[in-house]
Image (tube, rainbow, N blue to C red; front, side, top):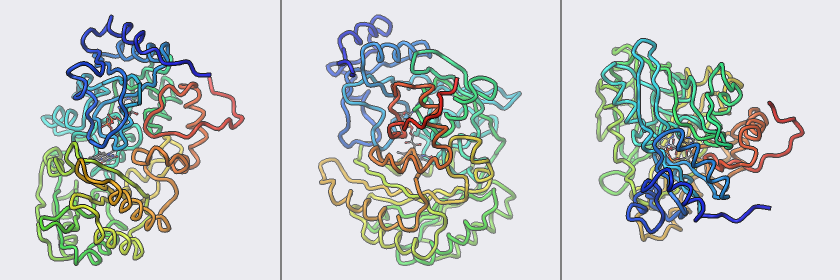
Length: 462
Ligand SMILES: Cc1cc2nc3c(=O)[nH]c(=O)nc-3n(C[C@H](O)[C@H](O)[C@H](O)COP(=O)(O)OP(=O)(O)OC[C@H]3O[C@@H](n4cnc5c(N)ncnc54)[C@H](O)[C@@H]3O)c2cc1C
C-alpha cells in the first residue's frame, strides 16, 4: 500500500535548509522553474527544490521518500516528454550544479550534474579539447549521457557515455557514492545507458579529446531531390570512416516546404574532409552550402534555435540498420505530408568508435552501425495537436517494418515501455537487477521510463 503524499511536511523540512530556494505553486518564480523546452501542457509538481550541492540533493531525496512524494530530476529541461516534472511531485532542480573543471594534466573534466553541453564546451575551448555532446548545446550533459549521447563526434570518439569515467551519485536512500571502475562497478555499468533510473548524478567525469577544428556545416537541397540525396547518403554512411559523421533529414524550408539537409562533421585530414563533403554536395544541387572548418563549439551553434523553446512537441523514434529504398520512400513521403511548417525529421549516425564498444561493456543496448531516426512534430501553442500527432505516428509506423527492435531510450515515449525493454537487448536483465539493487522502490521513475521490473528469479546483487 502506498501512503498519501504529505506536501506540507515536505515543504517544512526542505524550507528549513533551502529557504526561498524551495518554490511552491504560489511563488512568483514557480512558472519559470517548471518551464521546459516542450511547452505542451505537462505535469504540475507540488514543490521545486533549487539545490546548490550534493548534500542538498541527498536531503531532497530523503524528504521525498519520507513524505511519499513522487521525485524527479530537472537539468537542461530537454526531455521532450516532460519527465523532469511529476504530478504533485518534488522536482530536484539541478541547474545550479553547473560547475565544469578541466584538469589540463590528465585531460579529465568534471562536470556538474546540471551543466549543459554549452557549459562544458565553453570551459574546454581554450584548451582545444572536446567531449562528445549532442547537437544542441542547451541539452543537459547528464540526461544526454546517462541514456546514450548521440552526436557529431560519435564515429571518432563514441557516444557521450563511452567517455564517462565516473560519476558522483545520490542513491534512493540518500547515500552519496562514487561510481567508476573501482567503486560501485555495477552502478557504473548501469549508469552508462540506464538513464536517471539509478540515482541523481551530482557530478560526471569525462575523458576529453584534443580537437582544434572540425570541417562542418549544413547542405540544404530541394525536396524534389530527396530521393537521390537520401539514397546517396545511405551509401556514404555505409562506408564512412570514423572521422566522418553525417546527420541528415528534413528541416523546415524558407518557402514553407521542407528541405533535405546533410550536416557533415569531419574531424580528420582536411583534404580527406574536403573530398567527403564534395561527395555529399554532388548528391544534388545545394540550395545552401555552408561547410567550413570551425571550432567544434561554433559548428554546434548552427543548430542553436533550430527547435525553439516553448513550441509544442511530440517525438517518435526508430532505429534503422541502413537507409535503403523503403526507408528513403517512407522518409520522403513523410516530408511531403508534413502537418506543420516547423516539423522535422533527423537521422543521427552511429558508427566507428561507438560501434566498436562491446555490447556487455555498458548498459547501452545497440552497438551495431545504425541510424537513429527522430520524427519531430512541432506546432504552436493553441493549435490542435491531433494532425501533428497523427503525422508522427504515421511516419513511425511507416518506418517500423524496416526498423530494428527497440529505439533510443532517451526518446521513446513514456507509454512505449515494451520498446524500452527491447532497446536494451541482452543487457535488459542485468539492468533490471541493477535498478532493483540501487533503487528497489523505484523512487527514480525517470528517463527512460522503465516497465515494472519482472521478478526474474535472480538474487539482487550485493
Ligand atoms: C532539441 C533537442 C536536441 C536533442 N539532441 C540530442 C542529441 O543530439 N543526441 C542525443 O543523444 N540526445 C539528444 N536529445 C535528447 C536528450 O539527450 C534527452 O532528452 C535528455 O534527457 C535531456 O536532458 P536534460 O537534462 O536537458 O533534460 P531534463 O528534462 O532536465 O531531464 C530529463 C531527465 O533526465 C534525467 N536526468 C537529467 N539530469 C540528471 C542527473 N543529473 N542525474 C540523474 N538523472 C538526470 C532525469 O531522469 C530527468 O528527468 C535532444 C533533445 C532535444 C529536445
